[in-house]
Image (cartoon, rainbow over all chains, first blue to last red; front, side, top):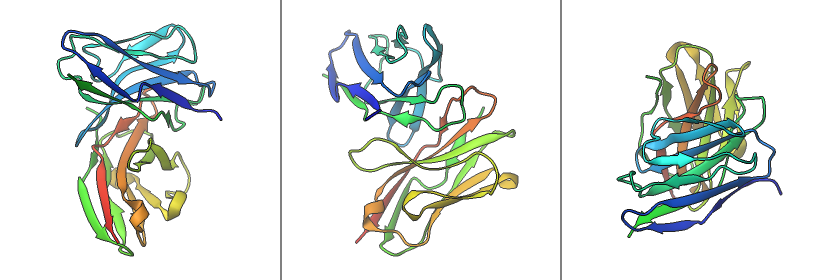
Length: 114
Length: 114
């Protein structure tokens, strides 16, 4: 079945450490997105990519980095510069060429600080 | 700034009660509108969407939403809720000019008592 796979489901980070969250999709979607979900704040866009080798900052990109070397993969690195990384991270993708189409979401990764 | 506002953060209803969750957006141009639902422990799922045409749209599980352009609103309704509707509900907007980026509301937690 086609879908979006995020891993790991739970992740712990030590102070000063970078961690990378994985997002893989087999839906042949061109566009991929990373959101952060915090209680009472909904989902906020971190980064998005509309095509391979290209990505743009979202609303809260500081302290994060991404890459898009393959169409299927859009990993997110939470760097030590992100001072409040504890959150639920969601990856999404959408159909090629139809930017108004709904996004499909992965199951999320919950990141916590040790 | 473009924003989406959900009026109720936490709603508690008894089974068979009627539901209406408010959603207003600030963007003045053409928009695509969505309601997503997140059941406990599950990923975000699309409930319904509006792109054009009939402003009353029907989604899964008996939900419907009405787009009222003059009020910049897209309220979600269900005539009779069930315990299984307990979840978090997110309103989201894609302004047609912004290349597919979803702008989410803060979310509404619905708790249905059996």
